[in-house]
Length: 360
Image (cartoon, rainbow, N blue to C red; front, side):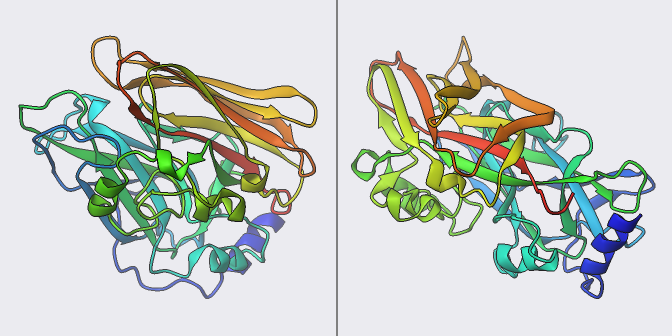
């Protein structure tokens, strides 16, 4: 009860009128908010970052009982038909991002509302091919003042059907629970997106992406890269001249990046959820502690057997958590086996959710 009062007190007097509300199911402790994208017309091949997209702006997660703090515990998206909203093949999904509103106060102000005890960046969740849902471990969540404006960006792709029209939409469910409800999380998480990067000269389709991408903080797979051309804005000066989107030549390739600066840990903490974003022909990713020499996380990926695309990526969930230390050095490795006979575009991102030590 004391902790709930602290949360409510932090958010007191912050509730404003909603400019836009998600369609919401009421009367349940674990609430669901629903969002349906525009119709995406897929009439040719659209590779990663090239497909149709839409942006739903200034969404609210206001609860029916007007609780001032909501815990966001997960998000899931289905690729559906344009009219009946029945599920269709997930191969047409590129990515989606649930973010703080681009025209809102931003992460610094958001974290100030929790007394500087949270470490949220622009994005709450990113979904990628065959990771169309993320459900945080039971008892964990991301606290968000109920009046917080959110944006949701979805993008489609089409790797396999060049000469047939396909129309799809994205149907998304955001899972929340009010802080004053029984069963509400008691442990807050913050997110880190960590990238394998390569020299900028190896970037894939840079000119095309620059022309087609929306200028929005949630537009690209890479955080803070509005047209996804470089990871420099994410990983700081050490990453200047590098990109998170590159070309893989035919054959077996291994890429590594030290990601200690990207982690930018505020304290020693624990990892409670992890998943990855990779492109076709990837075989997985590994997080390694360079200080101890031990592999911390290894997540695999698998492609479709009968078409181009990622069919499965692993996820990790842990109640106890995996210890990660501020004074250690860390490295990401990704492995690709390009059997296509031609260069192919690639990314390799590890998404981590880590424990907020001062809010639990």
